[in-house]
Amino acid sequence: MSDFTKMMDDYRLTTAEILYHFPDYPRLLQTYIWQELDLPPDFPTLKRFLNFWERKLEGRLHSVKITSCGIITPADVRFAQTEFYLH
Image (cartoon, rainbow, N blue to C red; front, side, top):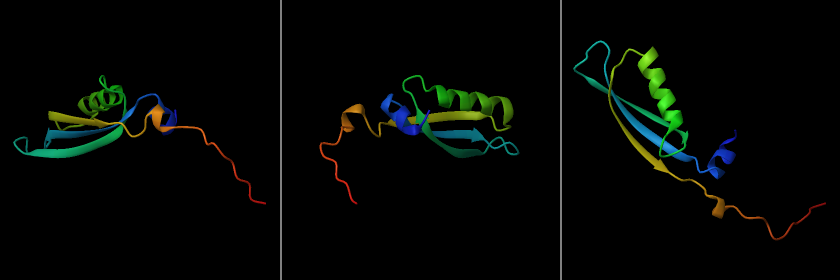
């Protein structure tokens, strides 16, 4: 599915700030910023990424902060009233 089609289906730009324990020094926290088009309020794409993280990566998750913002909505898209031809 293209990004434009996703945005028309109410997908929103989702940013997650992921804090995780540094694998070699578990007392230290590291930050990772993840950004993708996702569908609130369930955020299936983010959940898949976090499941992958827990299965495959060594750094144990500490916390995740999520923000989401619509880029375009169906009301922002309209048909052109005029066409111009050159040559």
